[in-house]
Length: 346
Image 1 (cartoon, rainbow, N blue to C red):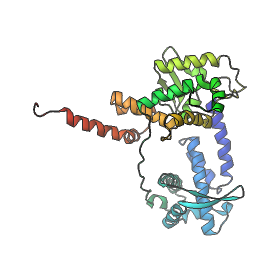
Image 2 (cartoon, rainbow, N blue to C red):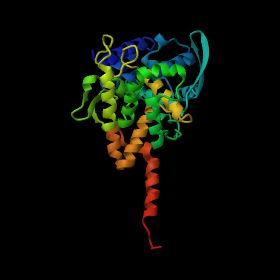
Image 3 (spheres, rainbow, N blue to C red):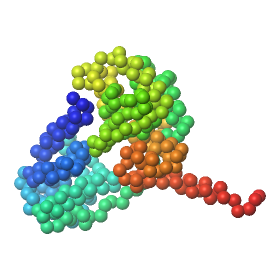
Image 4 (tube, rainbow, N blue to C red):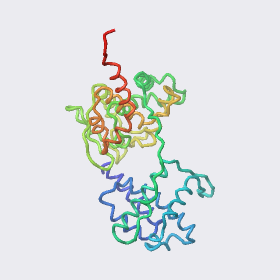
């Protein structure tokens, strides 16, 4: 079974389990959005809805299974605003322990967006008379500085993966077994800007060495072809020589990148892999696979100045997402332009 099909089944099972903890009318909502919302987004919605309806149950003195579509219709703007305040800092019982959880502006904005989708659906279906979520303002998001690697840091990172000279004694024991694979992964991420999920999902037969291209499954499930250069080519070929001698566990035979357990490498393992090397090279920067993606986008924009090309290759559906990320670079280009034109010869 293909990896993406396995993920789809896993998410379907997880979502069905999550629906058992939500009001019964939510099944109608999920049937209605199933053809246009990805599985990952649907499960994210379910987590947000569970938090929201737990809160509503507490203030309305009801149990989850007692909530009906009429109760949804009675929820006011004030109820949602109070919920938004509540999730700034709240307690949750987890495995018998009470823990404190909080949401920043981004987390609160995502949850309100989920609620807007929910209320809009039932309002459009005329099951409720108003859409109070639409009347609640989104939190103001404070832009964070985009973290990326500088050119010299990229070189140092790749050098560290190759020789591992600054790794601990324990890390070095594994390094000899994984350095070729690790170098292929990090070179691929830096050389294509692909997402971590896209990298994990690659099968050996997805690579076409005649055209230096890879078929990937984008966020949302669409297929796309991306191309790579000579440095990525070299790293992949070196790894494939090693990969040919590894007999993967049943169900993982086609996976390109394997763990030491001979299974397809996981999201967490890849995250840890990148952080392990990056922490040595840039201890003050929190570098994740996504930051390697930002590094690629930055380098591509510097070389081409084509924001639409960057958006296309990174798989951004909205060009404004790309512009937001590279707006600071545009300012640098504008300042440079101001210095280029001379009005008088000196």
